[in-house]
Structure formats: structure tokens, C-alpha cells
Image (cartoon, rainbow, N blue to C red):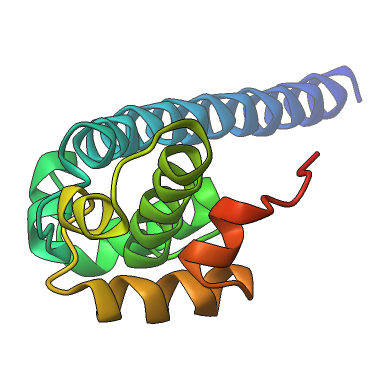
Length: 141
């Protein structure tokens, strides 16, 4: 009877230790993925004004495009290209309210090919044209 109880205890202990080891491996993979995503985020923050491709962001993270997109979305809640566009629009909001740069110069700085493309994209994200936003920036919390 003692042997069975010891064997059962040992088996349960092995299962428990295995679960702990698998959990640690998942955390290690998660933190490695977070580090990879940080490389891509740093690239976006540094190079947002030029055309960045999904391939280039995935390369910066050291992942394939599909895996990168999956990990990026899990980490940020957005697709990589949506995150990039939201980042650009965020910079645009700051430049529109805190500078006197012409809208064309802001569009060029952000990597938009034309002022019209910038204006359409800005309006789609904010509901306001860049000119209206600059004149009456909404109070954002």
C-alpha cells in the first residue's frame, strides 16, 4: 500500500513539475516575443515617416510575416500596419496642435504621398479634416 501511495505521489509530483516547466517555457517564449515586438515598435517610432512594409517590420522582429502579425496583434491589439497608421496619425495630431508647420509639410514628414491622401486618412481616423482639427483640437483624455 505504501508503494502505491508513493508511486501516485511521485506521479502527481512529476505532473506538477512538468506543468511548472511548461509554464516557464511559455513565459520565456512570451518574453522573447515581447522583445522581438519591441524591435518592430522601435523601428516604427524611429522610421514612421518613410514607407515601412510588413516584411520589413517582421524582419526587424526576426519573425516570419504570419507569425509576426499574430504575435504583434496579440501584444498590441492591432495589426502592424494599423498600429503604424495610428502612430502616424498621433504624430500628426501633435504637429497640428503644437506647431505652425504647413499641412503639406506634415503630410510629407509622415510619409504620405500627397496632402489629399493625408487629409483623407486623417479624416477617416479622426472624423475631422487636418485644418478643422488644427483650428479646434478636441480635448482628448
